[in-house]
Image 1 (cartoon, helix red, strand yellow):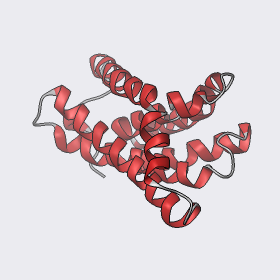
Image 2 (cartoon, helix red, strand yellow):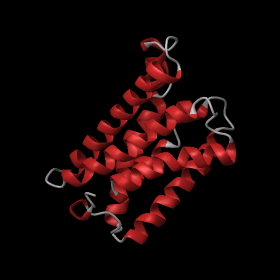
Image 3 (tube, helix red, strand yellow):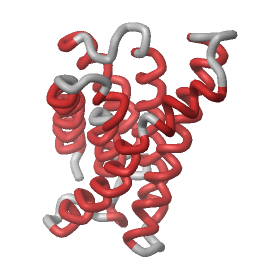
Length: 179
C-alpha cells in the first residue's frame, strides 16, 4: 500500500463524508440517526492507518460543513473530535489484530473506535462546548439511543465492506501500516 494510494483513498473517504450525508439529510434528523459520515472515516482508518484515518476524521466533517453547512457550526467541533478518534483508533488497532480471526480483527477495532469516539464526544460537550448544560442523559440520548440505527449499520456494513475489499486484494491485515 503506497503513500499515493493512501492519499487517494483518504481523499475518496473524505469526499464520501460530504456525499453520503447529503443523501440522508433530505430526511429530518437522519444524520444523527444513521451516522452516514462515520462509515467513510472508519473505513479510512482500517484501509490506510491511523494517520490517514485521523486526517479523514478531521477533513470529512470540515469539508462537509464548508460545502453543505452540515454538520452545523455548533456541532462541528464535537464531530471533528469524535470522527478523528474513530479514524485514529481503527487505524491504530487494526494492524495489531493480524493474529486473530478476521471477525475479531475487525470488530475489536470497530467497537473500540465507536466507544472511544462517543466518549470523546460526550466529554468534549460536557467539559467545553456545553459545560454546565450537558448531562449524561443528553449524551445517552444522542450517542446511543438516537444513533442506534447508525450503530447497527456500522456493525453490519463495515465488516462486509472490509471483507469485500480483502477478497478484492485491497486490504491485507498483515500488510496494514502501523504508522
